[in-house]
Length: 327
Image (cartoon, rainbow, N blue to C red):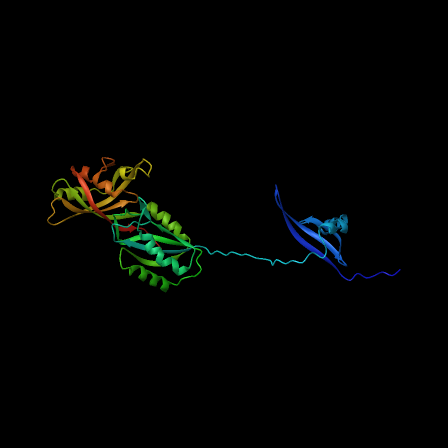
């Protein structure tokens, strides 16, 4: 009896993932094909031995498989499509900003559907396009009120740039710094721009809790200022005050009593202004300086008015230094 040689044979392995209640099971579908016919096939779980594969192949007939899967398979007319997505870790640009206007806030602010300009966008909208990124987030070591200027050494900030497609050299950051500082309005300026690593987050968090801030305020008294007033305030060092949540922020802050430290105060007379003087002071982070001056209806005590035994009011306020070791 003549035996006709088979023209071709091959062993096909197809991985298949099956989703069930216990999770995803990975199977390998084994096909033994010869002369265009499937001789045996079978699903075998990942990690099975060769013997288990052979038992599975022997248990399934080619007729049963051929009823469901024609061999050769039908021609594929739809091309395969592979979609990949790559993202880069965030880039951090750090520096210090100065704010010279009393009419713009640090971050976007809306009053009765009117959007108020903010300093973060003045900075971010210049730096962000350079990196061709998806978006950015502005973070700062604290914030000042909209009517308070940020002067002196500036306030530390970082710009978190998400999925940047280009990198930057230090000389390019210096050009961006110059572009921000050349803004015709001159409301916001920056200095010390540079890139930093993830450790900048730790520095920012520690600084928010431990930093000291220095201020200069124009103060009015209900009577003429005396040298004794200056002496009283200057001698009040490491003064602990108790501050209830100010009335002006009660709608968005918890009603708590917060102990704060006034580290030192220094007074400066204003010529031809008998009831006005400059108050320079250094405080613990989180101190409400405006309320420390006027007392906030007795919610901050002691305060400048109680220390001098008169009414006191603050006319304007500037931040002159944020003491914080920054990268």
